[in-house]
Image (cartoon, rainbow, N blue to C red; front, top):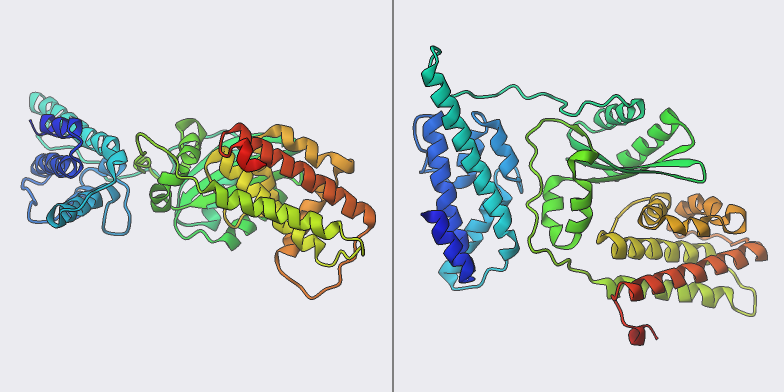
Length: 401
């Protein structure tokens, strides 16, 4: 009855009413589960507290809801906002998560059905009639026989105590260099430790191997779906998962329909401007190349981030130049041709760019040949970016001109 009413609200596009109606349905589900597993309803507590309390009896309920902090759940907080909006006669704009709420409610309903089914089986048997609970949670739920993968899993868990899941979402070979692309989900993963892990893996598995390590906590991913959902939805799939600390980690509450929010103009103009600035400096008649490596590093950073943003709807922060370039190759393997120019000049140059992230009071010494090669690479990468944004229809040819 309540679900039917909710569907009517959806047809009428009554957003606040939909949220409040779903809240009633979920309260009803929790009442049922509490009575089944504890013998009494905890209706005096809020929904956050009631869900958290049921975890000890029904661990799988954790798969239904993502926590937004230590005490509250993301979807349940939407109900709180809807109620406040109703009191203030304001609008709510989280309608893209209706499907996610419906999925969460269906999962709760499935738990109820399975629990009742188990109870019926126990009643018919000679065993005591108790609702089965599962409190022993295995540490690792993904078994892998690949030695390299096992080395990655052990190294990640040794470096980060709060690792929840690891996804190996791509593997490729570029000029005999094997690159593994890894997403780590967990808490308190500093960039410094990620760099240490990257270096350790390279030394442990082999110098011909490299690793792109991306790390976020689950709450950050959820709150960033409005912009990055396409990227994470493509990665967080069962086929890519190589480790999970327990089987009850929830998937993100995906938006539906999803229309990525892209502020491409800001990033594109910045990358374009950085490239033009570099070309202006190296084209001066006085052969004054002071600061050129810093300008090249700035352009290359802005190019890679913008290119990745266009291709994946994801804007990486704090990754090394090498990892950024590898993400560009993941987006378009044909870009390896730029790495191969001038006998691998760019491939040799990229590791040195980390040094030029920081401004230094130092005289620039560069051969004219190196300057000319950098100039060609900047021009070709600018053409690549211009062609991409026009091809994707993100800017018009008129705007480009």
